[in-house]
Length: 368
Image (cartoon, rainbow, N blue to C red):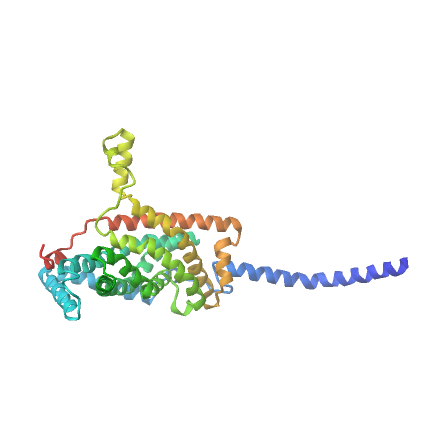
């Protein structure tokens, strides 16, 4: 019996010894596959040039040309002719059913046309910060980050013009519909009308804007990624776009009490810095309120950039938990970086939205 047991153990030992060399390549391959899924560079990818790393593509040239044309037109076309064009646009609203009893010419020009034009401008001013920081927190060099700050901003120009232009045209009618059908005043109808438009289709335009700005091509976008991206974007829009869009040219409740302007030296210093940076309640809402949603958006964007249409929900979950380096520490660091990203972007966006920009054409059209 002892000899039989010994022989049995000897046979198993020899089998195990032969199996180990066969198992090692399999284990190594499996581990490599997991690491490659979280890697910032696709397996087998060729070396990229600086222009490719900076995402200098056709979208960049198209956006640059469009923005240059708009800026040239605003400078070369006389203000009175711009004002006449705005007045004809207002008459066009009347011709297709917008009632002056609900929304006056002055409100239409200032609350919809002017405000959305400035909102588009302010987003473009703040966008280089966003795209620089996104590239930075996903491991790109300073030079590449600087290039993507510019290329990402230029790439979204057509979509921003479409987004805010369509919003300026549709929001007055949505507001009027709420006023007439829900018996609300103009002040009470604006917010639900804007939110309805945002959730009714504009959120998908914004999704394309962000993904394209970060360099994701249409071929890389997938339906499953949109199932995660869009709900997170809705939350961020509520805390970000709608907040900044509604406060154009003004500040909300300041974070630092006005009495500090006459207080001790350190209080006066804090007050001056707070005023210079336009630190108000809307800044906190924009920065803190959007960070959680932005972490999800960053995960989807990064995975689409690195894995394209082969991306899965598991890849997105891995990035959320383990970051770019596929470790718990990397995941925690990625969450912190996202908060800093939204804070700095929110600061630049909030500062742009708080500026009293001069709009002579709109003022002339409104009779100011």
